[in-house]
Length: 445
Image 1 (cartoon, rainbow, N blue to C red):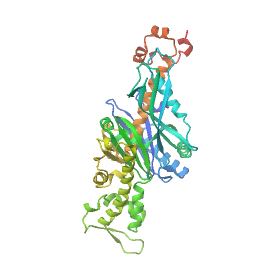
Image 2: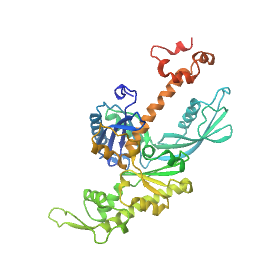
Image 3: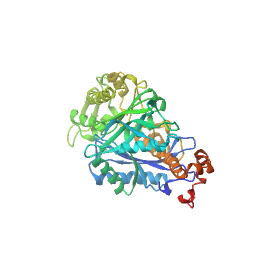
Image 4: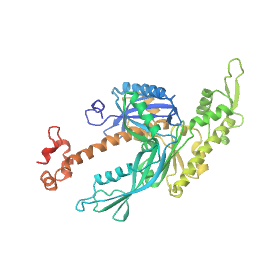
């Protein structure tokens, strides 16, 4: 990452960029001393160039990205150059695949390098025309026919196998997102699937271990991610979201789109029976026309019909995954759509699983940098994806330190290794051995 994005305490400053259907959001932050996420700045802009999670207008999207990043950069006093970008949309697909490698060096333990080679092989899978692999996520490993191993590093073995959860997307959709980021004079460090990011922000390790479904209800799409025994098992993107509900209200109540959006957010409910028959809201009529009276209960019937459809789609994905009976932690809903009144009750009624709303606040560290009202707003489910992208970016930055050190010290032969002390000692002493003035050939003398 650019030097301008690292503070003197060597805690990397990272930027998460959520290019959503309703809003584009940039969040600048870093990991605080107590391990939580300290947000330094946040910028929002209207998303006019994205439809159902996919870029439909390059210029408008670039404009939104630039606006959001400028606000976040100014607020945090950071020159933003590199961002972690979220990707979603109906084009996202997932599949399971199994890979294996046979290790030639029998005297050494299984290392991170072996796992990286296995993952690299998965990226070479032949995909259908026009599709590209976004993520390769290892599940259980098998070492010499011993199955169910979560972390094989340090084990002895010849045959290393693994089950993989592979997430792919349309090449054109991916290129359009990257093009928008580059046109905004930014560099994308990594493309991250949005439900994976959201899960980092709102799910606990305990829930992932027990079995949980994350449902992220955005403006254009609803993203689903199923976890069991701490491993992601199934992902899906449903092409309906909050905007579908707004459109239904616009047509069902014969009002303008902006009025429909206000009715949804201020008076909307996912369960019609929870509302009284005599509750009426009055909306202004068009020029020269009488104001319009709308029954809150009828409004809820319109919302409930669409929301039931979305939840039915989610339930279908749960049943398809084969994990329906293994989800002890039930369902966690997040995203802007999760703020709809009585939605957890509707989800529980349709699926029969426990449901709660996921807030990203447990990962946030209190800070004096942001105004109080912005810090409180950040704790809304709307920002789960943005904060998740920030967390994933920070993890990526922290993880890349170790492989760099391993690669540099693996070059000597074993006898030379002993001279320096084993890898652990070198890693303990950090960067003392890795100086710019020492060249690779110096190690091999």
